[in-house]
Amino acid sequence: MPVPVNDAPLERDLLRDQAYATIRDAIVDGTLAPGERLRDQELCGWLGLSRTPVREALSRLEQDGLVETEPQRYTRVTPLDRRAARDAFPVVAALHQLAAELAAPRLTDSDRDAMRAANNRFSLALRDGDVDAALQADDDFHGVFVTAAANAEIQRALERLMPRIRRLERLRFGSLSGRASVKQHAEILLAAPEDAAVLVKQNWLSLGALIDRSFE
Image (cartoon, rainbow, N blue to C red; front, side):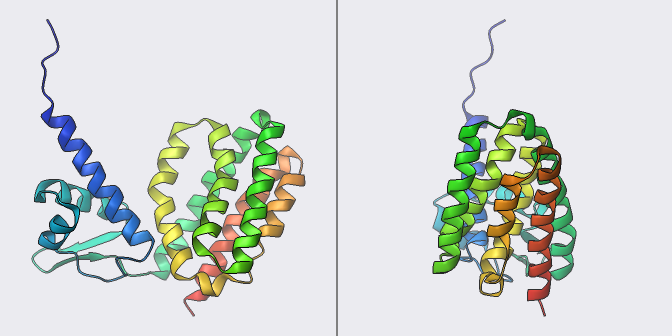
């Protein structure tokens, strides 16, 4: 029996994903501020989409911790929350540590060169106060481990958690100028494989500690 032809579900999924990615990025970069009310009509007009994919996107963002709702009262961007940050960073640190452990036997000289280049860009971006370039360079550095680990579950978990982390970094960037990540990245590159994963975890936990202190 031939597979039935029906384009509607695929189109709906694409529209939902489009809405999700656009709203998520606007929350992460601060275009939609913490605590800002999210109204269906305004979002639909901005995105040029119907209410259904927008509502589905908001539901997914709520599961990710970027949106919160109170039935019959509001849907809003989740305010910055110290406890949520404390909960998220140990999990992210453990995932990146595992990625580094799995990646260690697979890393090539080209991978290490890419990480050095990313750390150099990271250092320059921090010096210049360029938040976009700094976060991208940090993603590029750790992304080498995540890609080399070749573990889809790690990637899926980080795709859900990292927007929350990057949002905190972006909105607290002015408080992170003293971070030691450039030096920590260099130590990771020089470490023996069995030590690098532990240093990766410490790198993320130290960022979490800086974020935590920024709430004070």
